[in-house]
Length: 426
Image (tube, rainbow, N blue to C red; front, side, top):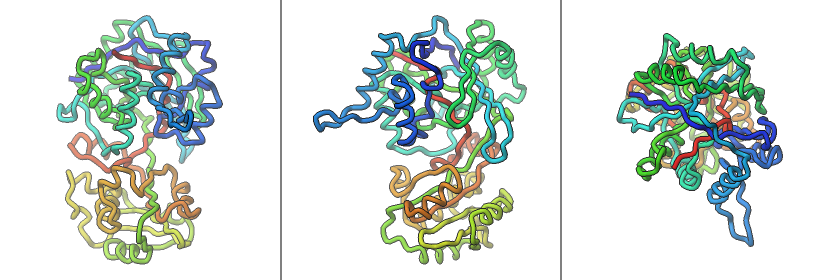
């Protein structure tokens, strides 16, 4: 049974300043440049809690987790943050342009709490593996602050749209928050505090299967913290934005892989190995490669690659071999380009172990095909592998079937903003 709960959120007061200067992208999307811009935007920006700068004192590196906790308490004392007086859900709509075709889209969901459950309970389903480092980082922040500052992105199955009806009714009033982020996405929030509406939404959600779209690290962190602290009130709940998987506003982008600091890396040797497993074609420009990648049917292999010191762009496509020969969790999972890239190319041909991938050794993840290619062309990376997005239907098929994809296989767009609502427990 899926248990969702309204909560008395902490939100920024008017004295904190304009909302636009207070919110931020999720912690794992905050680059050094974004971090700096948030620091400059407002002294109360949420980045000071979720991804604080280390400020050495007397040559000793500061504890950013302790400082985040102290900052949180100060903001509450100074009434920069104030708590709602009634338990509520929050309708959360995002209006944005599709980054590839320019289509105007509205994604609709609601913010609430959910009781964390182990994956084995069959209520919450993951779709990709996680990295160890980010989980340790988020766990330390949770231990010190006892708070969630951003929402996990959770999908639920509701083809009838029963929950969406309640959200539509709520959104006829002026929004509580109406703010545009630095990427042009408009975020709108409405408070839902009517007990009858809340009750209907809880009943409607009770039988829903859930799929983590974004926030695997934070979900597993919340689960670890609740096990570690069973006596802390509210520690067994996590703040989420719930979105109907059947909504037309779901956009998934590709996440590309770039590698550097590979010892004994030999481009010619790797290309020869790739030719023994794939049909390898080369092109003189990235646009042509992208066009050919997208022309390949979705059930066939299509992986782009760029090598340092080589002006050509390569397409890896299917040979007369059994693409499912690398045994994984389920057949559906084996059909994915990203799974074949990891199991065959990265692990077997390049010798980068799953442990190294989990610990982010040699590998980085990049949004944007041109950004990934430029990493190689500028000398920042030795090789990049370019992928196509995974369809939402395929993600659900794999996740609900018990399968799991490699880390960062998907990139749901746009991101949920941190700092719109805060959940404190204990």
